[in-house]
Length: 293
Image (cartoon, rainbow, N blue to C red; front, side, top):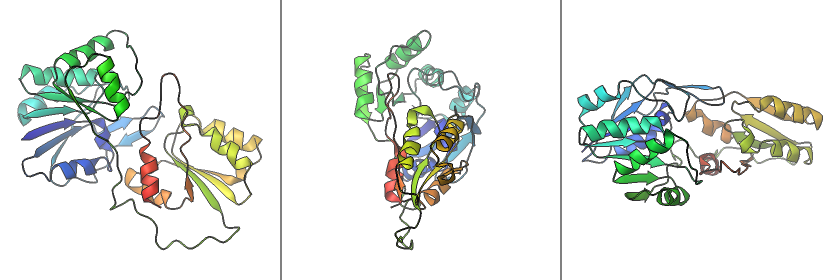
């Protein structure tokens, strides 16, 4: 069976490991489609990491409205579907996104079965045209993949009648996520690192880390690896609390180097804050950090 998977997530090298594993199935011919880069909403440009490419074909194609989650699309997708002639189109996007509508409609016109992915774990009614896009995708697919049970429940509440499979999207690769067996035992006054890797955004609750640091012994340090609009606020908070010399900010690193950063930490923190329009969907970095020891 020839499967066409479309996802902006494949710009990350570690996300490509899933493709390599899927391609190992003897009856699977896998073709992946991804853009040359993705503009994150924290201002960071994630360029395609060509890291895990064994066993499948990757097509890199332009994207219009790059960085816009709900309105981006692939202008060459119709040509790609005609040339690949897949037996199944797997769109790794939410059903209310325009890119999902584009892929499902293209597949439907060629009588190719298609499915979408859903990770929206809060019930929300979307304004036009996204409500209409969502309903079109519901009515023109027989299968949906949900990232967790909450997302599956949202699909049912919103009227999706097709089959739903809950499949956890994120795991840790033991080939790169493993403990540092040679790390020396800490002496009592050695630095104790509280770490975070990810986007520096308000919903991640990062001011709680600075606040907690101020009440901890002086040998405790906080290390933030990532980029985002909250950095200046965190720097200001650390200065006001007198712990600026105990806080370090590091730039974004390639996904395959994240485990190296995690292995330098003593505790990994992810104090995400649930909001009316957002809740942490999984917290992949927690699984990765635990595997790194």
